[in-house]
Length: 437
Length: 173
Image 1 (cartoon, rainbow over the protein chains, first blue to last red):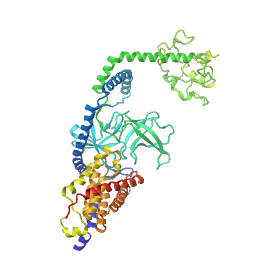
Image 2 (tube, rainbow over the protein chains, first blue to last red):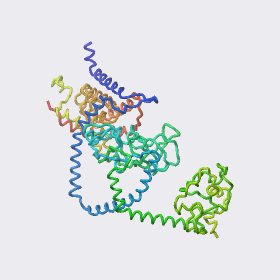
Image 3 (cartoon, rainbow over the protein chains, first blue to last red):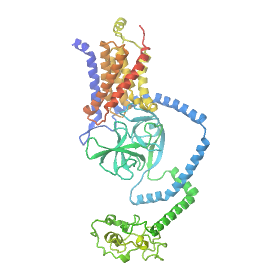
């Protein structure tokens, strides 16, 4: 017996070590409800201890390397490479001025959005507090896209906090150690972030592929998805706040496993391969942070009047363009169906019914079209033949929304406009039909 | 190490190394493997811990030492990733064992032969990693065999540079 162990000592040691590791692996995997295996999202204490040991060994030298590298770089940047700094400063000041203008002009929209969200009982979460951190190390493997940052539990970091850069999202905190944290990047195969395509509003899950490129999976074939479309966070994963930039669609490839599905390869907005400084979102609140509110107040005070003047000028210019478009002959096709204005809720109640060639079956019991009731779509004081505002529309000045029609749709003024336009194509009163030679 | 007499080691060509080299080289390999990809973008093509494991397993000509070093290095690498702990561990355990077993039977002073061993064990390590992930654990992991082939070549190249350097640190009897 003794000779057996001596003779096969090497093999027995190998088998013992392999068996121990296989048992350890089996304890980390569990079967989900769908019948597929998955790794435990929360590491067991033993596994976490191993990760902690590895981190304790690797992080100090990594921090030392990183600090020495940063020291060299900052020495160069702060003392030697200071040429053109004045020009850069002026450029930045101009950028700040421009952004203040933009912020002031967008402020009213943001406030209105907040009010509407409050009405709809929906609370948008704003990034309230962030913690800056330096990326100091990686996993060292291209099959695992994780990296380490130099902030940890000491800086109140927690699992599942979002990690971003000013360019876009980067990943989420996967594991927190006392002085460092492990971040799972969005291009890892085990990651997952809820995203939405900006234009087509198609939602999906973003995760990495074997080549380390983020891709949106589980999407049905859709020809509307084109390269260049922006991808934003959807906000449904409770990790990333809604509306953060993710990247742009690079290409669409068929799903190799399922025929009717596609994978949307995304070019990430953040430079995932060259990360130095990242921001960890440590707190989100349903209100603007104090600094942002102060910035907005400053913008309003300093540039609000200027922004308002520009906005007013833009509005006037737009209005004049519309008037010109209405008056100029030949710019509008008299045979074209009348398009209901998007901002008019009354006309927008039946957008699909205004398509020519479609069945004209009325949905509601509207009276037959009466051409004489046709009015210009945007009656204002410049409209030919309307010296005074129409009755019933006095409260809606030019360029503003009219009051919505009653839901019954029985008002002859609202319905016949589109219906007459699609059935008989009479020359619209406001278009070239009146002035066309 | 101490079980082998000087004559036996000389006959077998078993090499000894200063404790610092034997202890710090694997550690340095692990730290550099984690840190260098931040500076050198394509450094993940290399697998320094595997190369160091193969080197010491071949030089020590001891399958148990190769097994233990491979297991330690692999588990450490796993701990740094977000994946299950043990996948790399098993792959490198087998690689270390085979390198030690090969070292017992074949002359390992030849640089070309050591490069070939590194190439083959790198590929084998990738196969084991993939098999454990897909078959044993039943997890979904996309894979590119071309990438693994390139990795094996890269590891052979780095072995060509690293092995002669480490040979210089041997203890002469």
